[in-house]
Length: 161
Ligand code: 4NP
Image (cartoon, rainbow, N blue to C red):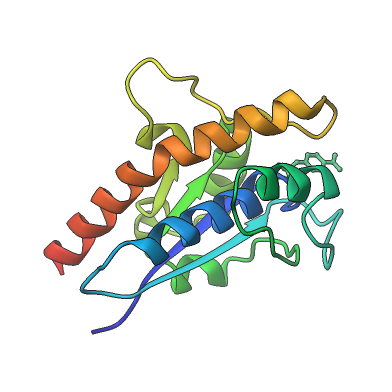
């Protein structure tokens, strides 16, 4: 059985989406799933290509007991072909991805991260880049809270195949 492939997308791929990638991979590693999950992240912008996650995000991920690896890259249209589920951190990221979709089967793979959060949660994972430590902690908590919902969606994708 092939792996299900998930891609997290933010703007720079140095704060939110690499954190989502590491947190969700740590979560999946603890589950005993009957199928494999491949997890990656990227940014819609090119500013930080090749860089590791922002040092502040690495520090907060470590403090919360998470992995903190990564090397930034930019989203490419080929990512639509290679992934089953593409999760944007905020509405701007989602709009950028929608503008790159070539046909319905591309846009059907797109979700907003907050779709996986409980009702009433903020609609965007806030960009922590220009703020203080508490912004990074807020992002990490939101990302942790979305893991169960994303896993349920992966199980639905697997059952529908
Ligand atoms: P990210 O955060 O999209 O969560 O990786 C940002 C990183 C860099 C910049 C903005 C947001 N920047 O403007 O360089």
